[in-house]
Image (cartoon, one colour):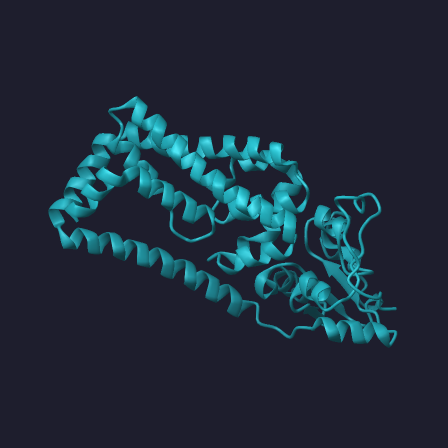
Length: 332
């Protein structure tokens, strides 16, 4: 274990840069503890602490700008890609869309304190057309707050951190095994939460071709979009209703959908999440509320778009630079 501590002492800045960059790109490798430890080791020198903060902020900004550009170029498709490498897909797109839709770029100030939020928020900023200068400003401030808090804690408790490192060094290989054990437990816990979530949401689903076929034969189920209103306005399946708008009409979110008889052809719920997690969650809630024919749409909006079917958008947001292109003929 002593060699690992010596490695951190000698190459701490490089390790911090790579760790922050990799974490902000989406890998489940926490950088905050490394920032705290490095801050403790460099606590005696204000110049070294300042350099540490700059290096970590630059690493975070590089990763976030990559996601911003990806969101700007590829739109909603990139959001699903991020969640596929996340260990917490259930807390992925829908929550981020809700927070970003409410607070806009200001949400980037606290994004890095929420696991899985930073990458999605960066990509979402590009998707919704947040100006690059605005994004960089708030993202840099957010990175400064995140990195600065870790470095401050490290320097504040430098003696405690140093004592802990000394104990781990004294334990030798057992100290290293202990660190590895804690990290493995962390990953396994996240993996188990993900697996349990997916198992709990198993239910019959509807494909986009099945939905299109129903529409072609004059059968129109009630289609519900669970995404944030801003995303709904920018592009949606034709005739889809926004769940956010529906649920605000009453103290009971599902009450505006009553009576159930008005949905003779059932309810179809879609999102942009891997495994249709947000859609399946809502479908389960509606089933508990008494709706019997509710199915999530496999692949959500991106699958519908990829199949060549048209995507509607509000005229107010369907302007040059924000247009949502039609992908094919509208299903009658």
